[in-house]
Length: 371
Image (cartoon, rainbow, N blue to C red; front, side, top):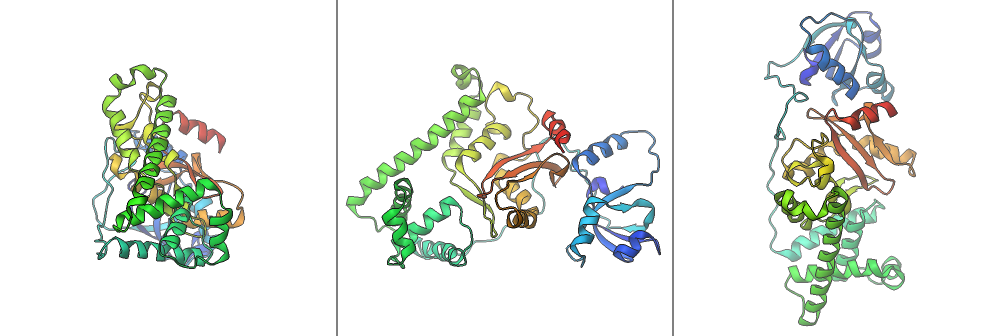
C-alpha cells in the first residue's frame, strides 16, 4: 500500500520486538525495493487476491534519523520484519506508482534558482577560476576539462606563473594538453574582447580542430549503431540531426563533486544520446530497445546528476577504500530514482563509463544473473 508509491512513512514498532530493540520505538523513511523485489511486487499487485505474508522488507531511513552505519546497513541489506510494525502513518497526499508509468515523464519538484548576475565575461571567468583554484589548492580532484580550464585561467590572469607546478605543465607537459589549454585561454580572451588580431587566426584553427574531433566521434557512434550506414539519413533523418545538434554543443560536465570528481566526457555523452535517448536514438540495432530514458532529451543530464548524487557518499567512500577499482551498481544493486532503476559504472579516474535505465529488458535479466 505504501511501498509501491514510494511514500515517506513513519513506522512504530511492536514493543519488545527485535526491530524495537534495534531501532527504537519509531523510524521514519521509505520502503526500499531492489530491482528484483520491485518486479516481484508488481506481479503480486496484478493478482485478484493478495495474500498476507510475513517477511522482511528493506527500508531507507530518513536523513533526520540518527542511526549508526551498522543500523543503516542492517536496514539496507536485511530489512524490517513486517509483523514487527505496529502502525504505519503518512501524509494524505496524491499517490503515484512512478515505476508503472509509461510514456514521457517530467522531473518532479524542480526548483529554479536565478543565477547571480555578473558585470561581464571577465568577472565571470574570475569567479570560475576562483572555484577551480579553491579545489585545486585543497588537493581535490579536478576533471580533465576542469584541469585544462584551471591552467588556462591561471595563465590568462597571470597568477602564480612562476610556481613549479605551472612550469611543469607549460615547460614539460604534453603537447596535446598544452594545445587544449591554449584553446581555453584564447576562448577567455575572445569572450572578454581582449583577443588581439594575431591570435584570432590561431583561435579559429583550434576551434575548427575541436569541431572536427567532435564530428568524428559522432560519426563513429553512428556507424557503430547501424549496419546500414548508407540508409541512415533516410530512415533516421530527424534523430540524426537532433543527435548532431545536441552533441556538438556539449562539453565535458561534472556530474558530482567530492574528493573523487565524477564527470561525463564527450565520447560517453554521445554514446548515451545515440543509444538511450528516444529523440536521438540511431540504428536498427536498437529498434524496440527498452533501455531508453522516459524523460525529455533536454532533461537527461539532470537525471544523470540526480542518480549519481543520490549515491555520491557511497561513491566517495568506495574510491577512498578501493581507489583502483571501478564503482558499479547494477542488477539487484541498481540505483532507484523516481520510478526507475539505473545501471551505473564509474572508472577509477572518475569518468562515468556506463549509465542507462532498466526497463524490463534483456539487459535487466542478464545483470540480475550476475548479482
